Image (cartoon, rainbow, N blue to C red; front, side, top):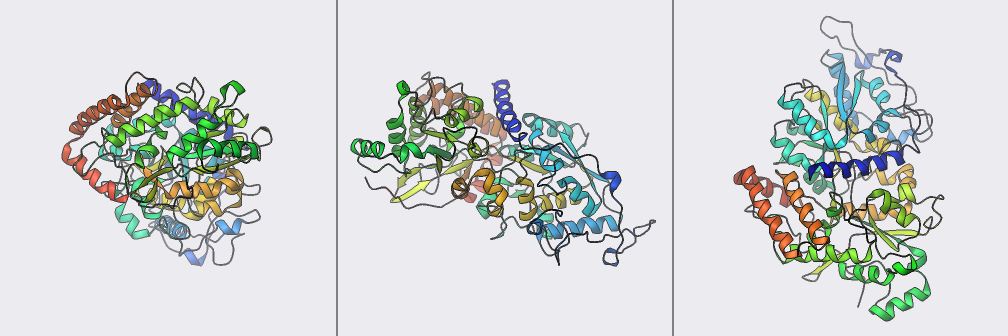
Length: 556
């Protein structure tokens, strides 16, 4: 099944990558030869056996700022001072340079869709991110373009063979536990404590704060990963022209007894999907993905919302919780939802799903956050300026509305154990993942990394790209996000779930048997991982999950 998995994963990223290129400029030319090291008393120090290396604040910086982009209107909001997280990182890199301890270059493994963020200048007048970094600390960045589905395999090979060709690896964040367990990743705890990143800062941090950091960047209680991609498959985009039509609204209320509006619960979502499903008229109720690898991402929110604060995948003793009423019901709903999709939904991918909404062939689409970025535009008049969005609904549990979303699968970064430049690599990642620098990077349409910081959604370029109506939904989705399965053994766990959900969706297995078979395979994986190791991982992860609840709006 792995071969098919990789095919589908490539299809998604290729699809988005090609879309991103529409807005991308020509890659920046080599700039290394243009750098002239400047001298200033501020950074004066002698490196052993060499002349003093000194840095001078570059032109275009606002008063008190030591770094950041220049050359375009509004550049000041991305600039930073010495007492900010990117400034602390950059000052430390400069000191390494001054002390003769800085590497000449750092080698980064990156997926194809990330290259444009580093090499393409944006907005007009700005320099490429890679050049900004180089001119500020004198260290070159070498990007090694790697197919995203091969990153995990390549980084483990790099470590196990002792090749040690990379300083910073590209990862899938859901695989962080397995990769850390392999020994390939460097734990950054001491450096996090020393340099104090702004990941949980109330103004510039990640949306979700400590919950996001704990589930996306830690494994076994240690910092291994860096979060650089806001991937969330929990958005529902709907056609306002249908939902706000008086005739449709009257007919809906007469049939279901409540006013047509954004649903609180999964049952209400089903009502809406059923109501608008008119295949004989060329209109589908709610189009989602149910294909291999991507489809089961939409099962997660149904399962996770089955209990308060969360329906976990494993209990504190490491036992699977999937073969329960919660797992069975979530699977029943998942299979039932196909009634309101295209008859070929089990094989549909991004190339079929995204255009179906853009062309007005459905009333609602269950999708990732970037549907508006690529499809809500004048080229698609059936949807342009006619769409709104909401995040996954939930269930009433003990008088509380429990809604859960999920991140999946999300590109990440990690420092290579075999690198000789751990501190410089960490500082580079603190600089990159700081609020101001990350927002500058993710606002660049030449790449496919998605926003996830508080500062991202204050940025006019980001808001314009992801659409004003979707920004509030995006923040809501992140605040409700629990992790996908991300404990040691993740690939075997997700493959077992994926395969059994497909069989349930097409009717080859009952939802009960699908969950039973999944649980049996999970138990075997746990035994392979080692029960003690697995229990520790679960006990360290589960407390980091969200506890947020909502107040229902609909009275039926």
